[in-house]
Image (cartoon, rainbow, N blue to C red; front, side, top):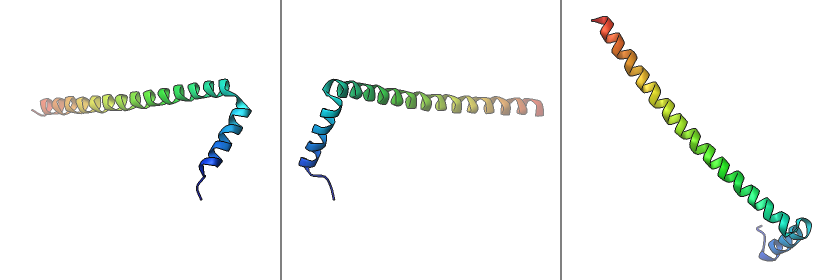
Length: 72
């Protein structure tokens, strides 16, 4: 039970009448900026996670080397 093209056009006309083209353009720009911000935050979060994992690996290697030195 999908929507036909005529139904989508009617909805589009109603939205344009209610909000106006200028306001719809602003909403579109704001939505695009929000999506860009979300993507950059996700990218930074994954980079931070990689850095943290690398630091944990380095820390565990240092600890194991120190244990080997003290055992000798």
